[in-house]
Image 1 (cartoon, rainbow, N blue to C red):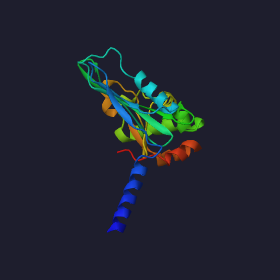
Image 2 (image 1 turned 180 degrees about the horizontal axis):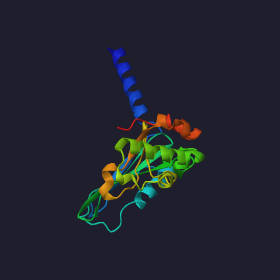
Image 3 (image 1 turned 90 degrees about the vertical axis):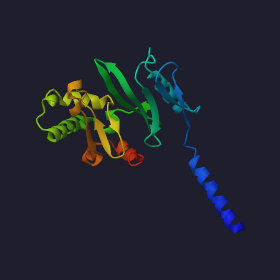
Length: 212
């Protein structure tokens, strides 16, 4: 019995140590008074997390009121080196609220925003943009909403970092007008883009955690 108890205590200590490893940093959620805005802040004095906290607070909408829609800004790691900041909610435009879903990514070492030239080889970005547009057109057919979508426009969105990353796919919107939102956005499995990735990002992608 004593031996069994010793084993159980040892296992418990191992689990606690693993769950509170050096790479895990706690966060707190803060509500902006008299609004429906919430945002996250990391509890760390490390320069990287302090930089993320500053970026998060810079994204808080100004002049919000209690009547404005719910809006949240959260952050989480995709890997030990790449962190996501996600803005989600709604904004009033016209007769009804419009959804907001914006993601940006930051590299820990060195600290920098992740853009398309970090993900794809520079000389391949136009090729990637064309492939993405062609994929979407095959998906929806000859849809007039896509008539103004250009390779240059899609390439610029990629270069500017206007996309979403996950372990399985590369996701991008074309920023279509509201009437065409049903046709906006496409998800491309990484295996279809693998030949166009930079060596450093291809290596980092292997370390991405599964996003549920």
